[in-house]
Amino acid sequence: MENSGSVMRLLLLCLREARIAVQVMFALRLVTAAALSSPGGRGLASWPALLGIAAWSCAVFFVYLLNGVTDIDEDRINGSQRPIASGLLTPRQAIVVARGAALLALVCAAVHGVALLVPLVALMLLGYGYSAPSFAWKSRTGTAMAVVLASGLLTYFAGCVVAQEASSRVPVLVFAAAMTAWMGLVGTLAKDFSDVEGDAAAGRRSVLVTRGQAVARTLCGANALAVGAAFAVCAAFLAPVLLWPAVIVLLGAVWLAGTLAYGEKGSTRRPYQVFMIVQHAAHTAALVLAVQGERVA
Image (cartoon, rainbow, N blue to C red):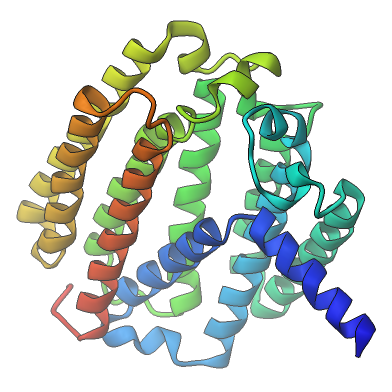
């Protein structure tokens, strides 16, 4: 019993390190894409679908746990309270768990089929390239954005694979494009505001480090408004079922832009919090509409 308790504590610490909110968000992206691809959520009511969701979740867990290991110096400078930076979890322990998650992800995906295995391997390779010191794609805003955009598209594609039914293509394409842009063009910038000190010390060349707060805030706000407006227009003309999620993103973009322009400069975590709230709300709205069986064809 004592050993099982220790293992559970280790896994919970690793889950905290891999950022629970991010893990939930990736699962929500996958499930939302699957539901939009299969009206009424019919494609989710099967063991293959559950296996696919488990495989993707393990892969994302591996990616973010590895990121936590490689970010230890920056996290400590930035005062992070995550388990590795605070000393509750050793990098060695995290690496062992990450490898186990990677293996489990590959096995589950292989059982599910090649259509899921290929994008899952691509996601894991992108995650490795993002964090591994030999590549460190996280060090520059451009390469970080590229990885985030690719991982978003792969996740939505995997959701369509998991659904095993493609009765509706336009709504899921519009939603995937809009929310991937929200991740890459907005989230990549928003997350850096609270990490600038550690990023600079680690030699990263993000927009915030190289161009400063004013430029980064303006760019992030402008990107958010552009994504919100484009999503609203595309939803109105191409996928009316997505109008409410699009409105949420547009209003969220205005909220984020206002926070960046007029919010307290010391509230460095607020832009990322707003970014996360908006994407959680938009995905939840789209998922509810899809599961309720709205016409999405």
